[in-house]
Image (tube, rainbow over all chains, first blue to last red; front, top):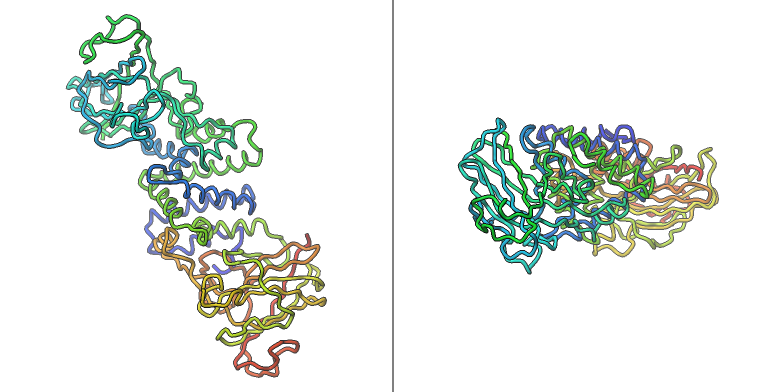
Length: 289
Length: 289
């Protein structure tokens, strides 16, 4: 196409793509460019706004390091990461939620009933439940990984004061599908808001906070892997999670307990808890593969 | 909004924006996020594709320097830069086209009839015409800047072998609206294709070439400033400009001439040209302010 206009530029773009282009790439690009051009036309994007947008991207590149990816964070706060996650999730079973940037490989094994709290200061939380299939039948041979923030809102790999793999574990669930461990309540935290993503959050009066959560990856033969997070029902940021991770079915109760006799059997810490302590009961339902 | 779903995430995003948000920012973000989310839903974007897209952005940040802005280039080859340009152009008069990254301030004055060719090797091209208003009346007091590539396809600020400000000038147009200068034919060139933008071009079988062009910025009191480019009708890349800059009304003819007697009067080089030489006749029509 020789003469490009506001009206034909999207068609011109597609016309410039060669016939050998991979069909999926061709389809994705066509939709991407159609939406990009429609956006610019609908808002009558000014040169100044265009420059500002490109400047944000350049700043995102500048602030990114091997430890911090501002583009992923941008995707997170625009809801894209969560949307991609939901698009690719199983329709049934426990909903998935964002993996986030703090998962690391190699967490140590913890037996069912093991203690993750160790020397972390904070009331004890006892978390347990069953890993089931979509018929409600406990799955034998399930495994999971758990990771969470310490009381200061930091993950072990963000904080040199924490021992390696603090509050991280890999667990083989019992043949009855049951899991159980003691830990502390994770703390809410803010996403990094000292870069261009923060600029966007501040300009729109948004909170950089994420509600506190326990991260889980649950796997079992014959079932779809579940990457998810579980949130407490009383978290103040539940209605405004900066990265759009909250789903109703992922909200659990911290039940306050004052009687050590209610501590379930099979815990490594036995009855050795300070009161009040808290109990969380959460079952995972895995979709078939 | 507490429970975010594929269906309500766009609404959730807007709900998270505070009431104090600047109304224009609110409108632009709403459209941006609506298109972004619709795109992801329509193509059912996979995690792998999402990762690939974010990786391209990260690579664009890595390859960008004060001299090279890969995000602007990305915008260029997606047609966004040209579209923003057309959205903000006057409806009447000579169409605008992209400024590009090679304009620099401080080009030396050249009188009407002056020679820009100097020691550049290449046949002489004589460019002239009239700067008019939309009624066709010549504008007195117009000025313009011109810049172009040398025979090797490089601008003076890309090529240390060229003198400073080679093939760049500022001209005060005559009170009769007429301009005239001698130069060489600019060469076509490729946009940088050794980064993520090149990856995209190669994956879609697109040319990194831009057709050759003369850049102009034309200003006159009481008129809208015109930033444009003028392309030769015989350029092989006219139908596939990597940055979507070509408009029918910006295409001109290089008329081959063999008789020095046809050289217009008032040229600093007089009749001192090697034949064949070329003549270009191009009028600029400025829209009212």
